[in-house]
Image 1 (tube, rainbow, N blue to C red):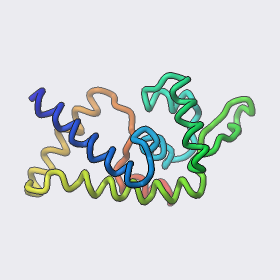
Image 2 (tube, rainbow, N blue to C red):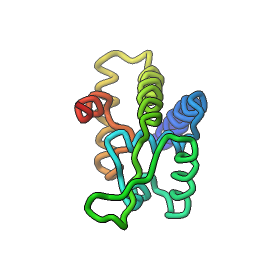
Image 3 (cartoon, rainbow, N blue to C red):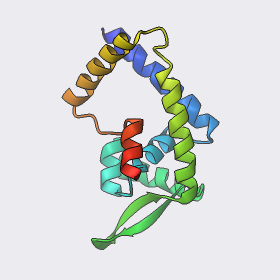
Amino acid sequence: MVPALVRGAFLVNAVYAESAREYGLTSQQGKLLCVLMEGPLGMGELGAMLGLAKSSLTGLVDRTERNGLVCRESAPEDQRAVRVALTPEGSDLVDEFYAETCRRVDGLPKGFSDAERGVLAGLLGRIVLDNDVPVLFAEPDEIAARRR
């Protein structure tokens, strides 16, 4: 089981990285944009979700901001706190990147029946829930519902 999980993780990461490159993003920038699809987040929240130290996160946000994809804004509850939000350009890009990446990852088990896909999704979902993995890449229908 260990080799299958590790190789599966490498496969998904490779597909994700290839998709990001085609959209002019690094994998980390793609993750940042996907996390921000649900709305602005504080730097502390982003660091915890992405597993990055403060200096690494600051550099990532700086680079992504220079590309015009995110912006820093004051938090409404505390003017001293900073939140990171998608710009209109970032929102448009992540919508396309997210849809394409979902399409590619969804195609990985192309030889599976619907029942097998359901079993796989259920088992992987349990692993994620049992290990308190933060939501970095939400279900496509969840994203659409939250944006309405």
